[in-house]
Amino acid sequence: MKIARAAVLLCALFLAWSCGQQDTGNFKITLKLPENLINDCKKDSKYEDFVDDFCIVNGDSVELSIFSTDDLSRPYVFDETRVLPVGGLTGSSDFSSLRSNRYYRFFVKVTNTQEKVKLTGGAEGILYEDTKNYEINIFLGLTGDFVRVVSEQSDKTSLSTYFTEDDVPSGARAVVLKDGRIVLAGGSIWRDSGSESYLTRTNYIDMAKLTVTDGPSLRMGVKDHVAALLETTDAKGALSPKTGKVVIAFGKTQDGYNDKIYLLDPEKNTVEQKVSFTNRAHARALTIGGEVYISGGCDSGSASRDIIKVDKKGSASSWKLMEQGRCLHGMIDVSWVTTDDEGVETLHPAILVFGGAKKYINTDQDKELIGYNDEAFAEIIDDLGTQKITVAGVECVTTGAQTSCTSLAGFGAARVKWDDPNKGPNEDIVVAASGGFTQTANDQPLSFSIANYILRGTGDLTNPKGMTWALSSSGTAIRCAYATMVPISSPDSFTVQYTALNCGTGKSIERNHDARNEQYIYSLEVRAAGTPGDFGLSASARASVNDGSIDNSNSGYFLDGPTVVNDFGQAFLFGTRYIYVISGFSDSLD
Image 1 (cartoon, helix red, strand yellow):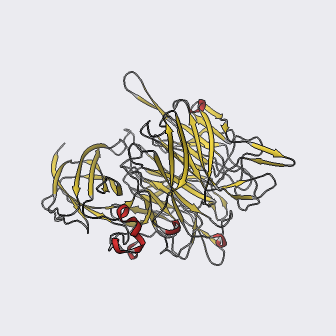
Image 2: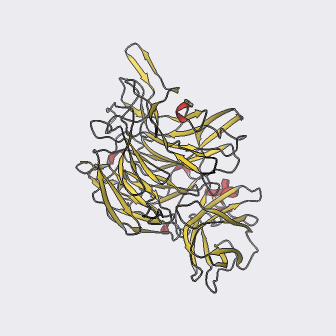
Image 3: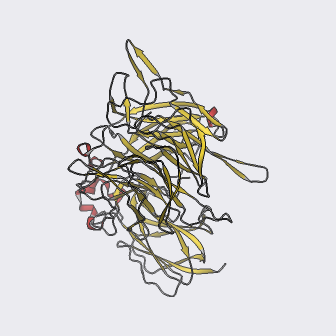
């Protein structure tokens, strides 16, 4: 394999570095900043309390890390890091041996003089050939806070999806491809007349180019579907296409419910129908070991018990049955890996599902949440089958004719992990959940959940069914009936882990034009306190530089929108026309 000595050129408005390229095989990386973040920042009252956190000044450092792999189906390996000071530096930096026909990932973080990480961003999936020159962008988002993605430092250059400010979007889904692009698919829009239109549109969001382009049309307009990345392979077992494909399945349609599974191929720009099951919407999906698992889903009458597996050949089949049919539930990867004496690793797929509803919810009178008829609030499914799990804190209490049971649906949930046993419970399974709705008593309508939850399993990580489980809660001002959540990367060896929450339908349980609301975006902190073996956990919203946790310069409204996370631990949140990002603190979720 040919190795070329390449000049990796970092360019940004606040840096005095040369950005001219010469010869071939060089990278020009332009660092892009959030809207108005650097414009006279110290004198801008909007940011006066956040200068050190969110402004780039002389004395800060820019760290560029480079990773590579020979195939996108394999993990990236670390190649090199270089730390460069802000201010006073000129010229390019010739410091990396880039190898032809190899895929590269670049990660940038900006720190202050106390080594506090302020901004991060990255680009990945770039196939390097030493006969070419490359120009890519890296958008630097705020760590633990959200900004709108712009191509320059102006709201007029905001990246926009197929939704417009005059629409009220709902039920779209998004997926991050292996090359770092994001696919946004489907959804519906509510118009002033009160009518709802289901969309067949898709977009590709390319963060390395900072562009949004149209993808292929879906076979039918759909919302409340599932979308997940499938690592399809060819006859030789190689990833094909290199981007992976997107599984798009089920969902609500203009005339009812969809029963089909489709594969979107980004390389061919096509959508292929694969197979049909029963009609359903509000299912949940995960990618585990490159394969896609779809759980549950419901129509207006009942919920499915199915867990469907889509393998790397693109074939879909029933994998297991849950004890309880459910939709609008939480679905978490609790898989584990074992290693034999010869060092061969084996993945053991396992899924935790919890909460949810027994039918499609339209109004607060649809009192069909799991929990009131001795149903399994949570269960774990693996290759050996399904098992209900007992969860401390999940209970029913009867007083006279009224019964109150633990119930939760329509929430966002994400697993968080600690890397340091002295900073948090790294041997536990910890799931944060927020938003959604509950039924406080058997004779009461559905209402907003007013708590952040932590579902925690303690014991042997290779036996999640045998762990001891507990659900705890704390009060919150977050009110959203249909929420989505993903983890974001946290600082190394830190007591706090973070998630990103996209908060939808903030006025009622119903989703219609009159229930539209501003898009609220939160970063949730899951904080560990105590000592190893005795850590307590709490969850709360992190203070934002954006007043009220909304984009004050966006006049659009929405009902709900998807949230996805890339391999850097950056979260992307969709809703009213624009794309938002919450950056993580390190280069990986692991």
